[in-house]
Image (cartoon, rainbow, N blue to C red; front, side, top):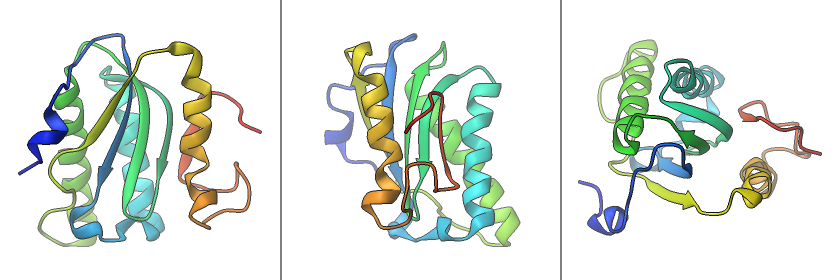
Length: 150
């Protein structure tokens, strides 16, 4: 079960911007496998395509994701439940495995000041640099941003 402290103070406001982090079960490094990382990227895009979110930036790290988006009409908890459920099912099917892919729960942060969205997106995209997975902001294949980032 997700930590109750993660849910304390959580609100879901359509039209608001969120940064969400969610982690694989037992911090398994599932996304060092290119096909697995691409599958997760597909489901991040699908959330936009299906009208739940408008993504601004995301990065798929070896054992977690960071995702910044504007919430549309679907509640935050359903957006994350849908993403995690569908991506887990697809990953289990493509890997011929069974079991838990994601840890329960997620960490979310409501972005209260729209003026800082680009700075937050840049911070998200710099995760692979800080982890030593890329040498430049645009070198990591499992990251995306709505804005051009130097």
